[in-house]
Structure formats: C-alpha cells, structure tokens
Image 1 (cartoon, rainbow, N blue to C red):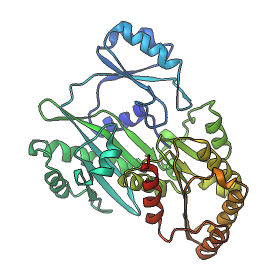
Image 2: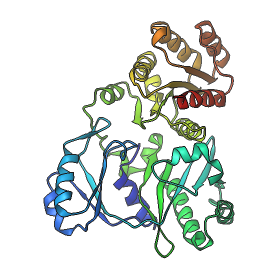
Image 3: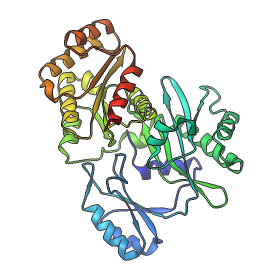
Image 4: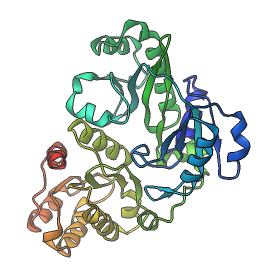
Length: 381
C-alpha cells in the first residue's frame, strides 16, 4: 500500500523527522483554510502516484488569490487518472541543497541508500552518477550502524557539519521502516536549509500489504478511487498498480521483488512505467487475464519502450504462469510487440523456461540480464 504524501509525513513527524508546516485542504475547506496559510506556498495534489510535479500536480502560489485559482484548477483535474480530492499546502522553503535518503529491500537485505543529490531527477543521477550514492546494510538485530552512515557521508563528500543531523535522520527513518512493516521509506528530497538544518520535503512510504493486519491504522483504509479505466480494470483483476511515468514496463509478482527491480532499473539509467504486482491475480486464478491486460496496456502506452516479465516464486508453479504467458503472446500480433525480456525462477523453473523457448521468447538466465537489456532499450531515442 502506497501512502499518500501527507500520511507518510505524519509518520515521519511521529519519529521526530521534521517536515514543512502546512495544512491539508479539500474543495469544501479551501476558503476557510486560506487565512491561516502563509505565502508563497506549495500546493501538492495528494494522489497515489509518482511524477506529480511533471504531471502538473505541484504548484507554487505566491499570493492568496493565486492560491485560490491554483487550488480550484487542481481540484478540477486528474493526475495520471486519479482525481484530486485533497491538497497539501506547505510553506515554501529556501533550499541550499537537495539530498536523497531511503530505506528499502535489496533482495533479503534491508539497506539505507544515501544520495549526495536528490529531487525530481534522482533517477537520472543514480543512473549516470552512482558515485554520488552510497548504501549501508541494516543489521537485523542491532539496526542501522551509525558509524557506517558517517563513513558513507564522508565518501560522498557531504560536509561534516551535516554529519550529526543526517545520521540522526537516517536512524529515525530506519526505525520507522521496521516498525511500519514498510517495503520502502523514501525522503526525496532531504532539503538542507540555513544553519545546517535538514527537513523532509516529500515522503514516499509503501507498507507491505501482507503485513496490514499488523498495521491497524492503515488496514481499514479505503483504497483511493479512480474512474480511470486502466486503474479500475487493474483493481478488478486484483493487480497492484502504481503508475510511475517511466519507459520500462514490468510484469511480475512480489512487492519486494518489484521494488528491487525498480531500483535496479534506476541504477541502469532507466525508470519503470509502473509498479505492477500480479501476486493476487495469480492466486485468484486470473493469471492469463492479468497478463493479457497488463501486456496490452504496455503495448498501447507510447512511453513504454521495453518490457520485463519476471516471476520469481516458490509458492506457485512458474511453469503454469509461463503457459499463460505463452498463450497471451501467441494471441498478440508480433508486429505490435516491443522488446520483451523474460525471466523465471522457482518451482518448475526449467519447464517454464522451455515453454518460453518453444514460444519463441528465449528467457534470460539471470534477472540482471533482463534488467540491463530493458533499461538499455529504454534509453534509446
């Protein structure tokens, strides 16, 4: 479950991580909230998707009149298929520098990722300048080793005066990640303000759906509705779908594996078109229908240049998934297909791979081969 920004920031504040002051407004409370706001202000549409800035979901209002005009416009629009029902209005900050900080899974490991650069173009920074990023492994018993965080900051040439604030924020984010059963806890950007102050300007937190029974504050939350046909169809097929706006399509299962592939694609200089998880579709007997719909969606999306199909599982037979995929590909006009890279690992893997070879789609022996090939194609102009 991807939390909305204001929900993620609420958790950040609970763990002592500072965020800008602001207010959450609706169309009905917009006018009443105006006298308590300070300008210039940032208006941020609260929708469960990335790339809001590029999609017009983040606007600066310098005056009360501009605020009212911009708010009405945002409430009347849709961001990547999602209606804007809430807007987070925050004080605009004078930023000296932007950094990146996240806790995530890398395979079975929990890692802290630190970036000397952050902001809307962080994927391109990670793809073309990995020397400006560093990772620290979280110990499953003792948590985050703070001395390693300080070592990472020195290697990234982040000024020493930020060592204390950065290490403190990282430790708090790591505790939040574990206590919230998150698969991703990201602050992008971490903004440096005057006086070596660090503040979280944005929050992206994904809670493991399989652990929602341990997180009662979110377990009963009603999913954000959207009249977008794609989103509604994905929901009907029990497919977890979060559009991200990139050019690499992903068809697979497992939230943790999906997040790992998302980061891996970014490391290779690409970006996923969407976060897609077919776990529940497979378990509910809708494998072929799910594969067919997601593939068709990616084939009709002009932004998607390549597709990764990855199923790494032990609880289900991947050879049966391969049979469904082969059937879907057989029914698809080959002239419409985009470069597609297939990888199967798990129960009856060899049978699955043979099925794909017989269908004319030789599988990749390693997931990394599929990721690198798909990312390379996505970068071609």
